[in-house]
Image (tube, rainbow, N blue to C red; front, top):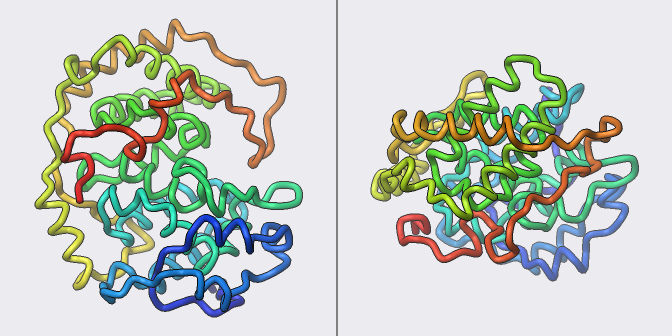
Length: 322
């Protein structure tokens, strides 16, 4: 049986400013001992007024309840299950997904219990899991890992990307992931690592991610592996179809937008390079296995102005998709 919210969930999603989260997020909420002040937070929010099906909160709430039920014994495994289903439920453009206020609203008013369930460490869930960068915030990071690692409508690469937490903690931060063949080539190398039983695969993920990003400052991956622009009209058709779409299935992967997959030849061109980078990259050996919420991952070598996938960079028009 799914867990029901111990508070009233608003019917429609909305936008909640960072300032409201900072003001009302208490240590008791982060510890799961208090419910959020619903009345105050709703007053501080702006609800979506178009009443579109994609902005209804019930499907999101049902997903997180199911995730908490399915993965209570292995909570990090919920990421690979929830990420593609959250993406297929919240159908939107990258521009819309780049608005932190939406994720604040979900974390504070729709599923604060999930944030605590998934990210509580020894005492509390970090505040950045409620309101933080797209690669840290509880729900934003799942939507973006699905967006950046899907291959057109195929979410199977997303499950591979979520198999080791270091992909979300490190790789998701890198701006080279905007290049779709790069993302798919990384997934192919990661899949070999994970399936071969390589000890401490997270060390290899971090080493390769940093090496690929550093090499990307001098190598133009789009020259080595050209990528066609995604099909924007098909994306918008998929978003519009949310009005008639059935809820995502729990027992099989949904279909994402059919906006064009990555050419296999482009991925093939990068995999040998990434294999070489991994072989030459120094591995950071951890003295012990960290706790789930203890981030011992070094920040990748990325110039400050280059961090922030699709959010803080000058992008070609198609990447804004909206």
